[in-house]
Length: 263
DNA sequence: GTAATTGTTCATGT
DNA sequence: CACATGAACAATTA
Image 1: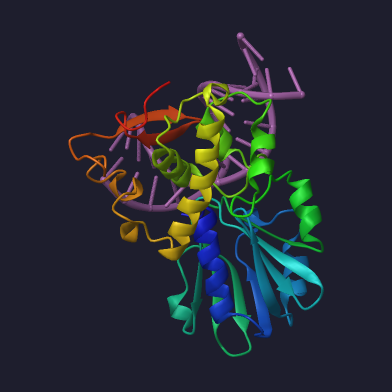
Image 2: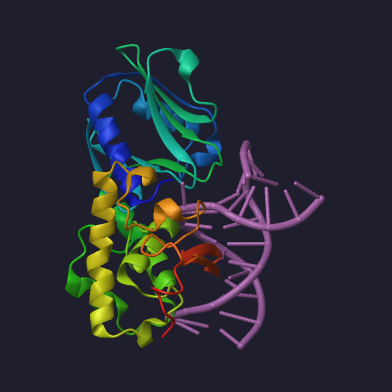
């Protein structure tokens, strides 16, 4: 589930559970999640360390350590966090396990191993190396418009491109385009300036709304597409309209063919 | 057995 | 170089 709103939820989760707690032991249970660091080095780095604050950029979560460095987490398709006290509650696919001095644990669970864990000394450098575009919640309108000018391709593909804007994935791209009433296959050069501004304003609207509802799709407003995706498959604005699907960038895309007309 | 899954990267073709 | 497409990564479910 980890697009921007989910990662924001994980940030709050860490803030509420794991901040300022001395780490007694760190265990990497599967080295495939490690990015440019070996098991012993990261375990040694985390042992006796402490998470002092957190920050999110796009779909990445950075945990500030008291050693003037950052633990980097990316959740891939199936990443999750769990804080618990009884080791029997450990998630089935724990890849990184922190054991705190207070006898509680924090597990980074990642069934499909697409997640990433590493340590960096400089967030901005890390973001630069990844060539990540501006964060979707803080990008300015001018920045967004400038990033889109001189580009071609489908609007949904643009929204999914982390080099252009960071944090939007398959699910929220669909919601943003539904709220904007724009067909996901529309070529960017066929969109008017007003359309692009509508997309821009709906990016923060959708992501903020998702965060306010704790990234729980079942609690999203009745006017949102997401609760209907793969469920009743009906347009929330008019239940006589069935949602359609199309593959874009290899991802199944849901849209309402009546409210999101092809140009 | 088949297809699909909320992410990213790489290879190949246009 | 920009973009589209499909494969790969891995595990599980419908």
